[in-house]
Image (cartoon, rainbow, N blue to C red; front, top):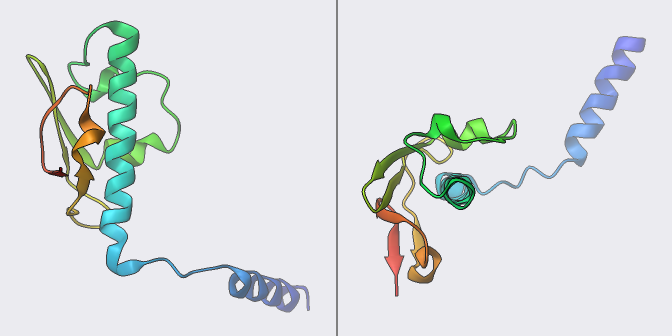
Length: 117
């Protein structure tokens, strides 16, 4: 009886959840989050240390969820900033488009993000 009640409780909990995740745009949704998170932590490192990290292993004060974007981007330090490529959104490489104003004041030199005027 206890197993049946547990199963019914789980079924009710699952049916109450909103699973309307936009699957067709999942790569772009997660890719955007991966890109924005990477830029934020990389730029914070620059503010704190006066230079961009040699690689992502130098980043400090990461949260548990940061491993998601760390594994989804490719970072390269270059002379005047860094290159940042989003290699995975949800499952594949996303097609990301950002307003050009996003990169204002940032060290991004090359990326696979498309910039719109």
